[in-house]
Image (cartoon, rainbow, N blue to C red; front, side, top):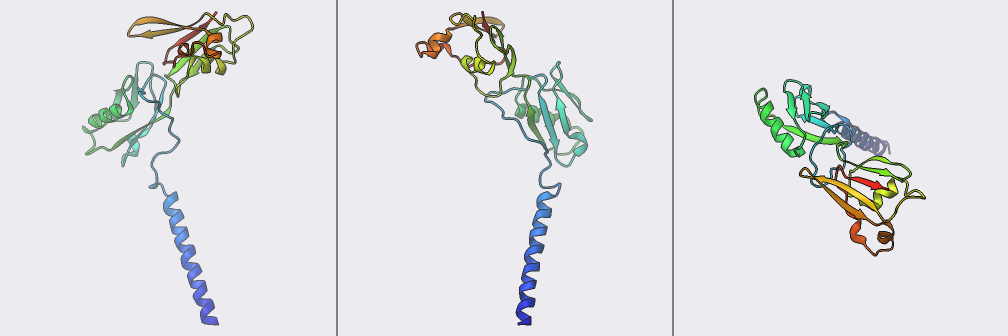
Length: 202
């Protein structure tokens, strides 16, 4: 009986020891060098001013860190100084960082993580409950923006809402008839918004 008890205790000790070792490995700094959650990056996303990025140089913590894209479209990093980031994708920025770091570090391994997106925004003004700017992190239609903005006010001109869009330096105007969209008569008016669009509710 004593031998059985000793054997059982030995098995328990081994299991507990293995569990503790496993927990130590998971919780160790080597488990994941990246801290903080990444943002949901929409299709076609390019980096813009005010976006927050996490730049991770593996094995070079001194060069790593969170950076905010400045209004001039550049970021600042130790040793590399200023790097242009706006207007390109995170992958294109990664390649650019690898090229720049290659002058100082042998075989640099870089990861670019988008943590916060502030450059993609749409605007709504006029007779809505909460006019202002709203982040565009996912696809959003005109009707959805109106809902997010608290809905139309009592005296809003529901038939003559306009979406003001600038593309390639040219202004475009898209009509939006709220009543027809809601009644499913002109669903084509309910376009998907793009960054910088301004919805005007007279």
